[in-house]
Length: 210
Image (cartoon, rainbow, N blue to C red; front, side, top):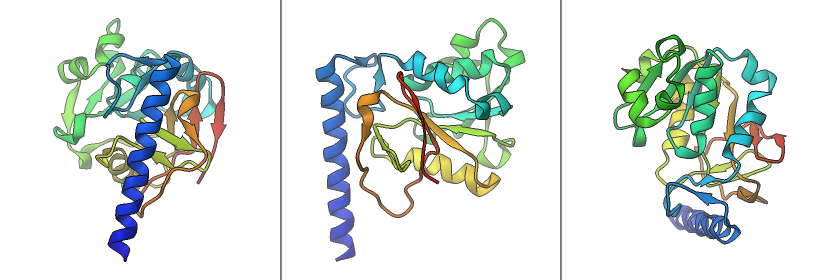
């Protein structure tokens, strides 16, 4: 029975992913890399959402920011470096652990350093146990609800990243930047799904679950 429930939730999640990808495409707000299907979608207004996050006190107080590597959150990563914050970046699918990028090492090259290629070249590869204290987590989503439950692209890596950091440092606040069309009434839940505390969109900021 439990296996069937889990299977049903996974199907619900996949249906919701496909609904969001289609919604963004139909609205004409999907952005490179295309197609967005199977990805954390990049979207028109990602820079505006990142700027809204940048104005928050939790951002201003953070000296070290952890971020996912997807294109939608590239403006957040670049702002972190421009604002003099240490950036910890997950590598794709966590294959190579994490990358540490120091702002003083990439002066004038913050845009490049905030890409996957640039972070590998200009940053330092570190193991999870060597991650310095993180003050803010940034995660990518396909969908998110106003209780803070998030839906990734299906690999579970976003939840694992948050779990690694919160098990090490306690209740670190987590945030995501998404298009307004990615906010849904309810994200299907499974045990181990992590929640975000802040959602920044091109139009507004939500302070949500947990």
